Length: 244
Ligand code: PGA
Image (spheres, protein in one colour):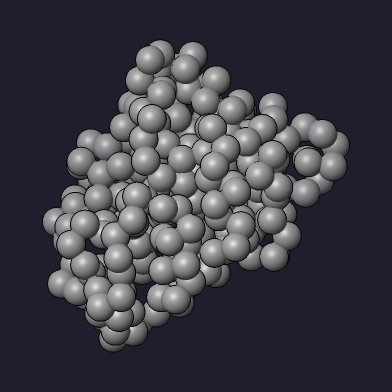
């Protein structure tokens, strides 16, 4: 079984100067635990993270182009992320799906592009509140997963993030997280066979120092994708300690 991945999603927060200070503060205070840490940060901060994060803490982008290079103004390629030292990239976050109209097919293309350049994509899936209230969260999320993994190898991380729990303070219960993580694991077994056991399935949505341990104790949950509580070093240390 893989160890827990504590993936920190800064979203559109922190300048390079702030990122440098944050990474230096973390370097002074972090006592490595059992979890692997990765900071998913705005592209312009990644050089500062490369130079200042403690050894063993990985980093990555929050999105990547589906194209290799060329006339795609504003986009960032997987080769660029790899060159700055990134290990991971988030694809298909619900904020990208919602605000930028990203389809499952585009998310899969981005994940393939990440893998082709030696990055591990963190593929996000999860239902909105109306879907959950209709009791359709499992089939909905599995259909999203199927579409988002088209042509994607097992060198991938899945993040189950129910949209109604993101940034709302309304956390899914550990049992809610495990229900979907187990269903996702089953789908991964069908797709990848025995290799599915090595694929991390994360939970995301209002994870904090005081709820991370119970969620990650569930058998099919291998870590968390954390937004709000990723911004303060003290919260990150609290979550890292909780996973020991
Ligand atoms: P949150 O965000 O922890 O602030 O709910 C999680 C995410 O969007 O990845």
